[in-house]
Amino acid sequence: MPAIDFIKRTAAVFAAASVLVTTVSCSKRTDPVVIWTDNPEIVSYVELFNLSHDNEKAVVIYKEDPAHSLPPAKDEVQPDILIAPFLKNSGTRKYFTPLDYLIQEKSISRASFYSKIIDYGVINEKQYLIPLSFNLPAIVFNKKDEELIKTNHLLNIDQIRDLAGNFNKTYKSGAYSSMGYAPSWDTEFLYLVTKLNGTGYMEKGNSFTWNDEALQSSIQKIKDWTSEKNTNTTSEQNFQFRYLYMPKYRQVTTDRCLFVYIPSDEFFTLTGTQSAGLTFRWIEQDGTIPVEDDIVSIGLYKHSKNTSKAEEFIAWLINEGTQKQLIERTENMKLDTVNFGIAGGFSSLKVVNEKYYPNFYRQLLGNLPSEEYLSMPKILPHSWNNLKANVIIPYLTETTNTDSQKEPATLQERISDWTKQFF
Image 1 (cartoon, rainbow, N blue to C red):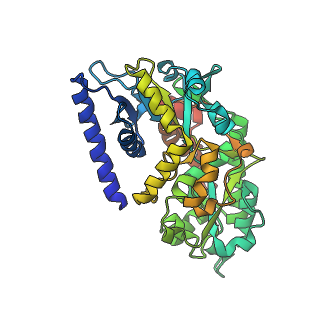
Image 2 (cartoon, rainbow, N blue to C red):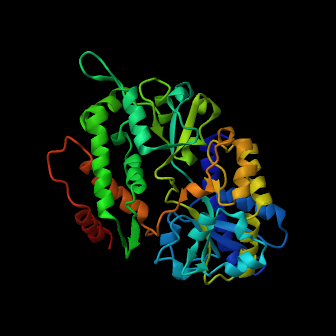
Image 3 (cartoon, rainbow, N blue to C red):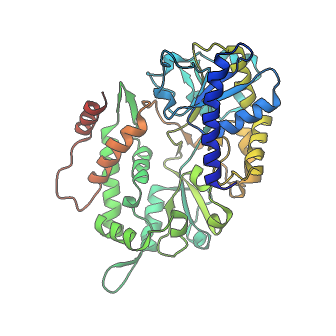
């Protein structure tokens, strides 16, 4: 199914689900599990659940920001389950029921999870959330350049910088004819460097705190990379404007650059044609691969009116056999170029990744993330994406620009401005 058809279909199903919730709420004949989510894949999962269960049914209500939608409005249909990122914070945790009993009673084994992933759902020593999926950062390059990369699975920032610098070539005029990689090409890469360097962004009220020494060290590291390898930020951006106007996956096939940064959910939804000739390494630093911030988790709403059936849905979804079916269903419906794995990422169940993912994503054969390398984000506010886009990214863009002549606003000043606007 083409991506656009899937999107239209998903929108229609979300709309139909909302109508169905209203209908069944006015009728005592049915009592479905109500799921709030921003993840389109859950619609397909609910379809399969309903087909395979006679006595339990579920419906989906789309919420653009589920974590920010609690508590429900007075006249709104209450959820039983939330499936979304950024559920682990002080603003939402009070709305969830601890699920330790569910893991014990419904044969959900903690041992089947990546230990760091399942522990991410623990708050105050109680399992408030069950993580469903996660993603990882990858550096992607042309297979023909594999001989330049001496490591098999991982690359750290220093290695990426040096390999990229060695790839650089210039015309007689001094302008670059090829440039291995430049930090200023991708603001998400700038942010990733700060995470790898230990900046440790963490919730503090409606805002966040951070290790400023690590942040300033990250900024200097990026500026040194630009100055030592690529002359200056202007040179990097001129090169990008001149040569890298095509999609990322095509940039490394032009011989103009060596690397592009693509997270796992984007890389593994490339079509076979798009990914042909490409390979990748996981990005690490000091033996850790940072898990992307938007971990998708499941929470059981504290005031659920349908708790027992909600528990059945959660137990069904967090099951090896179910997830195998879901991956196969995605493949059979030709949605694998729209959705990656389970709920858009690696499964939180280690066995699912190891047994089934390499069958559908051949580049993962022998290159699955190793559990000991995973590094989890700290607790982040539910508005993290907004904060990152409007505060952190502009700050990093300005402070890492080697050609900037003005003193940029501090991060704290930007937070204050953002707070005035939204609170």
